[in-house]
Amino acid sequence: MAKDKAFYQKDSLVLGGQMRSLEEPLIMGILNLNGDSFYDGGQYTTVTDALNQARKMKQEGADIIDLGPASSKPGSQLISPEEEWNIVAPVLQALQTEMPEMPLSLDTYNASTAEKAIKEGVAIINDISGGTIDANMIPFIGESRTPYIMMHMQGRPETMQQNPQYENVVKEVAYFFSQQLERLAALGASDIVLDPGFGFGKTLAHNYQLFNRLDYFKKIFGLPILVGLSRKSMVYKPLGTSAKEALIGTTALHSLALQHGAQILRVHDVREAVEVRKILNFSQKFA
Image 1 (spheres, helix red, strand yellow):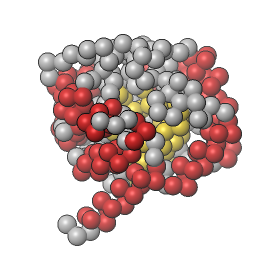
Image 2 (cartoon, helix red, strand yellow):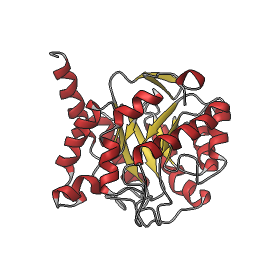
Image 3 (cartoon, helix red, strand yellow):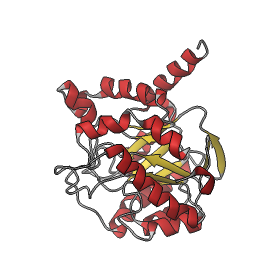
Image 4 (tube, one colour):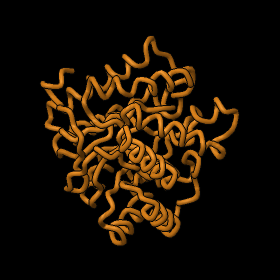
């Protein structure tokens, strides 16, 4: 897609009606509300536990909190919009009451859930399917001008890690983005963030091929790039460890991701990601 025909180089993002500069990368804290979620599933399934974790992430410096009512780990099943809303609504309302200034993201692939959440004050929709699970998502994002994180996924969570195949993963992900961006642009969307979808229908090799070309996506689309690799297998498999032991490896990759052009880090461990950002910012003073 030619940038002069749709989207232009962006170093800002509208969150909750406020323009946020992306000259300094943003840290998005993950708040998984589903008991089956990856890594921390079951820890924040009550409003009390979710609020406590949100308070912790805010104190540690999170810029955005991403609410996840549905599990999307490999092998998980899609859930209905009704079930999804029943999980997220009480937490969303509690967060809006306690910390209304905190921008909230909703991790959903259901357009009806997204629409309800935006009416309740959610600032941005984070869609793992990039608009491919629910055909109403792209029209909703375009017509409502809702800020949107568009992720690439091959297949569906239930089967996505069963022998994923690409001829050229970088070009195929870029082509997917270009097709969906054309649709969004035609409907009037503007605040779009791209997420290559690490671990979503990709082998270890695919993940690192994409990771090493983050600057390519930034160059050809001129849009903010979100990286979501926190404690995933692309971190712990090369180390021969586990998600529980993957904090140091995650932190190392976050540092590299920011140097490759990522502008949003989606993380389980906010304090460590904030420290990565601080160190890189400090080092650039002497470049």
